[in-house]
Image (cartoon, rainbow, N blue to C red):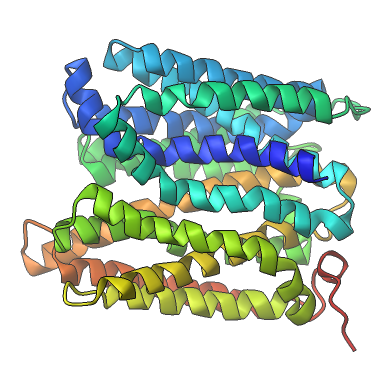
Length: 459
């Protein structure tokens, strides 16, 4: 079980690290390729667009061609795309390779989770997911630090080169460890649903990117957001009529899946803003270097390691419901403490708060990533992993976009042209309120929710 979990964790880590490591390297990439630094942001947008557009089809593709084949192919696509990124000589070539990377990433995460769901007994699922999710908690926090180090002391191309040995090892492990399972009879592919889903997700992602980063006219951004909303509405009615829709919304009739999904949306938006807000506050508000702020942010990844050892005992002792409610409140307190950060604070205080945040963040993600599937039948696992992955990725992206929008609104309200400490405080406090909404939704869990997974006993 551990080898299988580590194999999936390797793929997750590679995908999550690559999503964040590029941010600090964008200025160097633009200079190296002779491009406008603002346009270099297209490398991030292209990845997000292909990732969100292809996520919904991952479960159906795995059912059709087999989990082992699809998982190995996804790692291969991601690895080859990483090689193409490292060899790119123009911004257009890099953007195209990043789009290809997003396709591989869209298949890796949900299919990897599906591998565990179908291969690991429910009693061992929490332990397996703890092995898988811990590296993914560290990767987004370590990304800026790794990116800054490689860009400063080597070259931005090494950001992509490091994926090559990891990818080759992942393919070898997957082919060796994963059995070529008996596949269910393929269902007719929902092409119209795929078109609506792709339009809804990619239209919203591109619209938010244009709006938040000012990469184009606001009229185009609003038009894309409107198109995304219209497509999402269309898909909602389409899914109600189709006998086998691409994304099965009837999964939201399962209480544990529905509550975990809605509570998780607010939690992921709230905590997803942290990797964006804190480095910005430390660098722009406190005058720290990128490497100094990266060291503080990385402290959250260190505390995430401890969660792997404590998740199962805590869930067994207190149960999912209690852990998730208290943990959401702790997350709100953590974000509120970040809002109170000031340059006069001792550096040890920054580390202490971020260590707390890393523990809270990792424990909640472990709980959300397992309770959602507690009552999902084996036959619906592929559909549930696709929907869960779409919601997870989209919520994290919304966290960054909403944080950037809150900074802009606070600055405009003050008539300021640059972000100040008060603006970051507004952003953190707003996110703390969303974490409290997650806690309130957690109250809807049954007292014994997830008992089969956690081993908790109730009288």
